[in-house]
Length: 267
Image 1 (cartoon, rainbow, N blue to C red):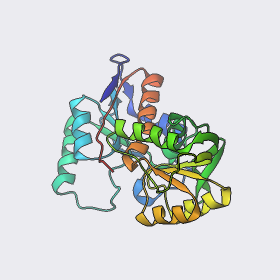
Image 2 (cartoon, rainbow, N blue to C red; image 1 turned 180 degrees about the vertical axis):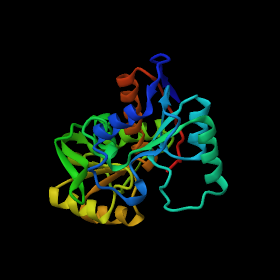
Image 3 (spheres, rainbow, N blue to C red; image 1 turned 60 degrees about the vertical axis):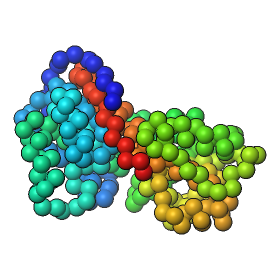
């Protein structure tokens, strides 16, 4: 867990929400219904410290409260599993949030695709890659990025593994990465990025290396048949960068403290 200290300022919650909605284009980016992007739970109206986490969970809620944050920004929000009765852990989480006056803001695809703060562009740059085009179409938007390089594929796998392990996971690459294989056209789609749609798009765009968070078993089989290398860096690890960068940006914009909550799933 890391903390950025800016002071003891307090900012109206609605100012931060307006900033986030405008920055992420929350109202105009399509997404899955359960994402429910934007402010998911209000507090009493003032924010003094922001916490960032990939997932909304008991673990991240309690970590935010322990850090005395009263705005929790997450990538996967409160309603990810759909309609659920407010009982058991769901009731406990809500009660603890209300008692501690913690608001919750969620951003899924709007954060994934953001050109500066997004998971995809930041993962590419973390791996030493420079995006030059979009990738991974969803409805009328693109979520991921792609570009060109001249790098040994095994070196790229090694970079990805270092990143994954620093974020509580590990990297798996599809079989058959030869020592002399070179990545020349790559694409990144974080999260559950390996799918029938992204593999077909990779084939159309001449991609030789696809970097994702995770994917079904069959994608690894199909990739070998296609001559495509898929590097699976882990769903959780692949989506740490954006939400942390977003909280840091809020901290800078409003001169309030922020903290990053690490709660890896191992997946």
